Image (cartoon, rainbow, N blue to C red; front, side, top):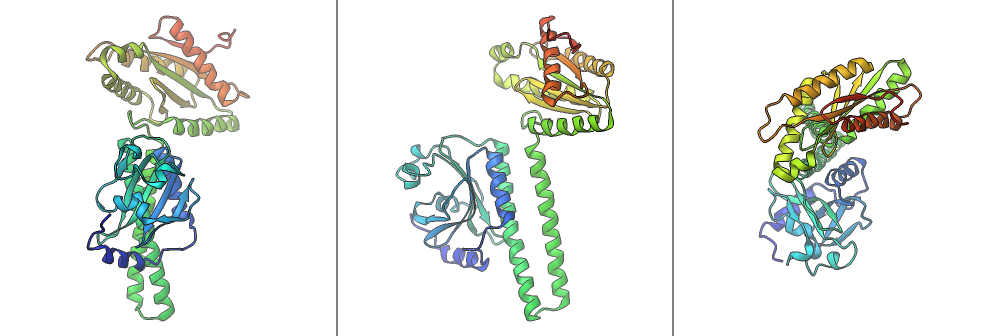
Length: 366
């Protein structure tokens, strides 16, 4: 392919970062690992492009350190620095159908690359994820990949600033005032990195449809609360909430309306739970509420309030109800047993006609 006239300037900017052929660094490895995790792909690399090759500053799931630039997906991705290039299926894309990385190891079918753009607008390479299976990125995944690419660039900028500071210290060419200014810039960049990392952590713990905590956040909080209950001999209860007849709702009104219904159920649960309860989407049409310091009696009372708020809601298409199973941790039981007790109670609630609350008594498994 023909490179743009500005290629020589782009290469000069790349070399000014003095990053090519440097050793592995944890800061970059953390970002490629997080990119692969959020985008649910087996491979992720930070790819930097010089005149002849693509060199990988960091690799997740991929062994090669470099490859030929003429065969690089990333060469195409940096042509438009303002957007993320997504190739859902390379075998259907005339640019890549004969690419050796598609027809041979690692057999790339899906690729998404977010350009690493400098403050002056030059794209040095990409943070990219790829897979041997065709697929798409969700909107949150695409946004997260772009955010992570900006953090890679922030790391490069930070490295450049630190290297400049070290040079300045060794040569004593700059005044104390200039050093302090650079230190302030470094502090600002570190603050921005911390804020961005917190945003990414929040994204990784949030269900993209409902805005509630996701299963990963639920598992982490459950471990914390059970450990605290054992340590302090305090109570903890769990609600498992299932939307009644949700499959038929989807069949009749379609998945888009089903998603809207789930969002409304999530909002009602969140608004009617206590501020310190954790409300999570447990999976599909099932939700969970972790209730620290709560007895079975209080948990049942709150569960009934949640059930009633959903049943009384003004639903647009047809009435939506939920069944709720309640369990309180028995000291000595595992997390899995605790959850299974709530699940048994939920099963009984469905057996009793749905739109009701049932608590686990210990007799329900027999």
